[in-house]
Amino acid sequence: MATRVFKLDELATRIATHLLAISSKSTVALALTCRDLEVPALRTLWETQFCSLESLIKRVLSTDVWGFVFPDEDADLCLFALQRPLTTRELNRLKRYASWVRRLNMREWGLSREITRLVVSTSPRTAPALRFHLRELNWWLNESNLTFLPKFLSPHLTKIVITTVTFLRPGESVEPWGEELPREVVSTMRSAIKTFPSSLQFLHIQLGVGPETRLSEEISTFVLGYGESLQKFSTNLVLSTQAIAHLMKLPNLRVWATEQGPPQVTNLIHHGFPSGATSFFPSLKAIDLRSEAALEWLSLFEAAKKRTPPWIVICPLDGPGRRLLWYGMPYAALRITIHGPRRGKFGNRFAEAGSPHVGRAAVQ
Image (cartoon, rainbow, N blue to C red; front, side, top):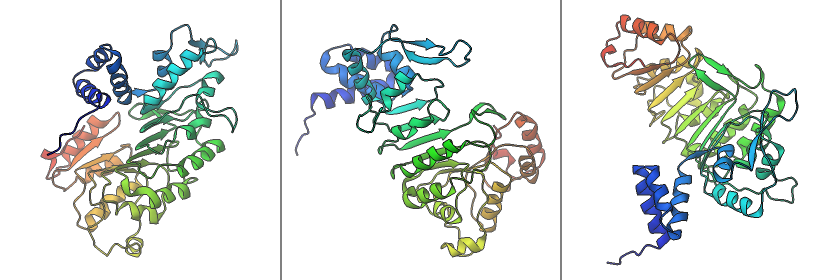
């Protein structure tokens, strides 16, 4: 039997991964041991940490390079900026670490033009200074970073989170725009969705509050063409009936959050679901219902005599949540996660409703 011989880099990476499971400090200590172990250990460390563009610069470059400035005396916006031009050595160091980043969390407001140029080419003929090879992207859209979202959509991404909403605490949110999204946001997202990788496993898109119809065609086309690998899918973008029917057939979909109600039974039959069939959502473990219309999914499960997922999330509680809790849920091993400032109040009402399985229900 042949024995595999590991290369030094390969062996060092395995050791670094093992140490990282114990403590990140152990991996840092390994990097300081010798030159041969430095790169594998640091690469392993950076590949597993969420990093923002701001934190990348802060960690890699000295404090005299970066800082915060007010572009105008009367401006309220403070920009994260470079204090001086980067030397060749500093730029090369930044490039090396950027190439190791696999999980990027882009939530910054106010990036200076100089920092933006590091990731966005100034002309079609020039490449950006920094190149990322991302697997996970968490992006909060705002005026500062809207234009260069497409630059980070790597074909190797398995997880994408794009939102215009920041949740402060249950029931409260802050948006950088008003009730209606600007045209440039819709345009940027229209281009972005078309470049989503086919290997995507986790997708969350929340643009504004409430159902968003202007990107229905693009998101539906993505689901129909590349949805086979999806395991978690959450969006307020309105899907076509055909796309929803396709989602219901996906073999790996475990979590789904929606503001839409289910298609009519006649439409499901048209898309390949026999009347009364229980074959839809073969692997679903949790469903997040975010509107009164979405609660009709529970009726569909009941009508088809299909067991509901073990986790049902109701958010928000106003109106439809109260109705659901007063109905009680006659499903075995049902767990309901309640979001909202009045969860204790409604949790008590749920217990008083006398569900036959309330002893196994979890109100969190």
